[in-house]
Image (cartoon, rainbow, N blue to C red):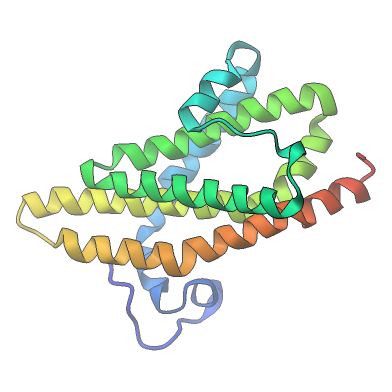
Length: 208
């Protein structure tokens, strides 16, 4: 993959978000596009299969969620942040055994989101569902998919190393640096949006 170090900060949104790692992230874009495409496809599939899929099974695969209604806003924020950070990291580093696990994580998240959206829309309607997901989802979803793309890149690095090309250690260092310096902060932002902006949007649109 392309190295993430460059001369200064590249111009544009990529440079603003990723600084000196922008070139590395640009090199991940084909894998990110694959993750995004399969995420959207699985999300649509999950929505249309919502009445035939057990949410309990999906929650067991992704990890069960506690009853957030019994938590204060600080605990909810911490749970959302830690849940996203830990799962993104674990599935990302599973790339060392191949690119399939990080890609599966993207697909599973899409299917879960589609099934969850179906369940919520039955009770609250599509408008409420969109209002509850979009404000923070526009940051959270691309960030999680970026971690999947980085994990896939790690898997390709392992394959290339077996062919005598490239270094797994260097790719792993790039992946960890990206995760710590960019993915975690972006997941922090998305968690803040989820406990602040998302409820405000729901109220402003009259759903509460």
